[in-house]
Length: 111
Image 1: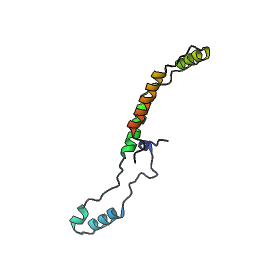
Image 2: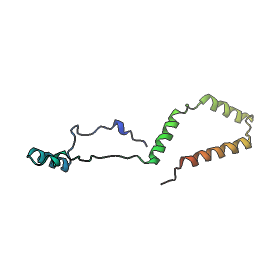
Image 3: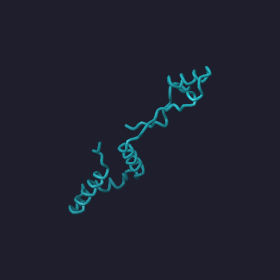
């Protein structure tokens, strides 16, 4: 299940102030040294793992694939039921090997 963090809405629209930011504001307001007030306060940060980036890339590629061709599916079903559909075992084996190679390229088991 994917969560689109771009469309999340927060409960408050006012930014929250950390205790360091509040202390820096108090010190600046009370005439304390300007060095303390001008020191940069680090905010929260988010980092995306390479695995998450890979999943996002795979999701984008899947979204770009064409929709299922229902007419083609019906045609193949008809051919199977009539005994006209023949499987080429060499082509099937090559396609399975290609698919497995693509799965290995995703490195999904890497932690």
